[in-house]
Structures are given as C-alpha cells and as structure tokens.
Amino acid sequence: MAGRLEGKVAVITGGVSGIGLGTLELFVAEGARVVAADIQDEKGAMLEQRFPGKVRYARCDVTKEAEIKAAVDLAASEFGGLDILFNNAGISDSMRVIAEIEADTWTWIYDVLVRGPALGMKHAVPLMLARGGGSIVNTASIAGLQAGWGPIAYSSAKAAVIHMSRVAAAQLSPQKIRVNAICPGLIATSIFGASLGLPRAVADQMAARVADNAAKVQPVPKAGLPDDIAQAALYLASDASAFVSGTHLVVDGGITVGSRHAWDQSGPSPFAELFGEFAPQPAQS
Image (cartoon, rainbow, N blue to C red; front, side, top):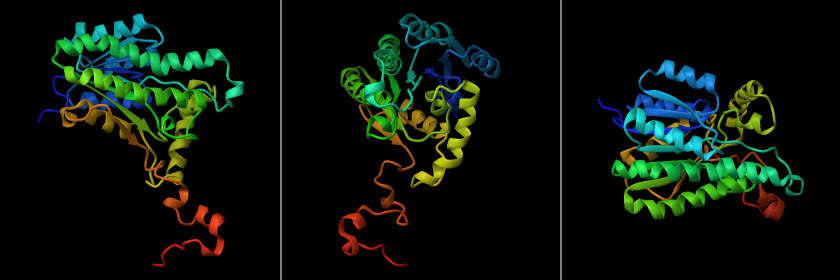
C-alpha cells in the first residue's frame, strides 16, 4: 500500500530535532523524500545515514536567504522538485516585559519566525509551480492566538505567521499551492529550555519535564509530543487536505478551550467570585 506522500518531495526547516524530526520521520514513512534544513550538522549527517537515498541534510540558518534558497534548490537537484515546504524552524525569547526587550531581540525573533518562512515560500513557489502545485505548512503557535502562552516578541511573531499564511493562501491557492499554519500547544521539545538560554543538552532534558507535567494543565490528559504535530503536518501536506487553504489548525490538547474551570470543575470558578452563593453549581452524578 502506497504511503500518503508517495512520490512527494519535502523541505523541513528545523528538521533534525523536535517537531521537525518527528515530521521528517513520518513523512519518510509515508513515502516522501525530505531535505532536512537545520544548523545541527552532526544530527543532519546521522539522518542521512539513517535514511540513505531518502533524506538529505542542508545546513540552513533561516536568517540567511542564500542558505534557504540552497536548501530548497537541493530538493530539486537531489530529488527532482519540490511539493511540500514545512517552515518549522523556531526560537523563542525569555518571558520578559516589553519595556525590557532590546530592539535587536525583536529583529532576531522576527527574522527567524516571520522573515524565514516568508523567504522559504519565496524560493519554494517556483519549484512548486513547476510541479503543478504544492502545499506549504507554517508552524505558528497558540501564543499567536491568545496572551499568556509565550513571550511577547515570540507571540506577536507567531500571530504574524498565522496572518501571513492566510494572505499567502489568497495569493497562491489559485495556482494550486495551498498554505496553512499549525498552532501547537505545549509540546515536549527543547524550545522551552532554549528560550531560557539553557545549553542545548539541558534544554533537551527540560523537554522531558514538559512531557511529565503537560497532561495536568489541559483537558486532554496526555503530553503533547512531536508526533502530534507531525500528524497534523501530514494531513495538511497530503492530498487529504486538498480543499483546505488559508486556515490554522490548533493542536493543543484543548488547552485554549477556556479557563481551567471549563474542564476541571474542582478548580476555582470565576462564577463563584462574581456571584458567590448564587453561582451555578456543578451537576451531581
């Protein structure tokens, strides 16, 4: 039985760890050939050895347009074209108030999270047009939808990614190139530790802590894992979503459905604070 991406070629930025790696593994299992674009050379070389003939590594700092173009061009030269672009490379800042953030931090965050995906799309589109269409998936975040889920620079950049995806979809969908975004919730990856300035090895360890505790703070009682986002990326990359463009898919274990009281009636209720003894009471089983 053919995989859902049989014959497809993909580029995944941030493709050697976390969400990017989980997506690469799933895409390869579904028949795709993949260029992993990242800055972790050792891990990239290991992936090429692990998936000979199916994965190529391209060193790619997404703040550098020439490296983005080279990664996209590698898909064409090695695998014959490009059908899927997953703009996934990400960074974050620490949780600081806006008055304490340097101008250079804003530039850095936006260069990676907004300008990088924009340039990825710029260089991917001609190759996709040559193939008769394609799918672009951009990693956004629930931080781009609501306050409180990330640092302010990161959150505003992710909001920009959501809207950029929508506008790009309006431009490109008539040319059979679909554009969508994914908004992950609490996913057990190293980005949380990295945002605190921790060394990569320590940040990787912190991901395990997220996995241990995330299930306690959201309606779906399990940790969010890279494969949860990979499955969403697979749907948006595949022909199963042929009629889907210009939207964002929230994959967050239900954490943004409402306040904790909406799903955990043992928690404090805003009704109790407002109305006291007249507050609605939970139904008795």
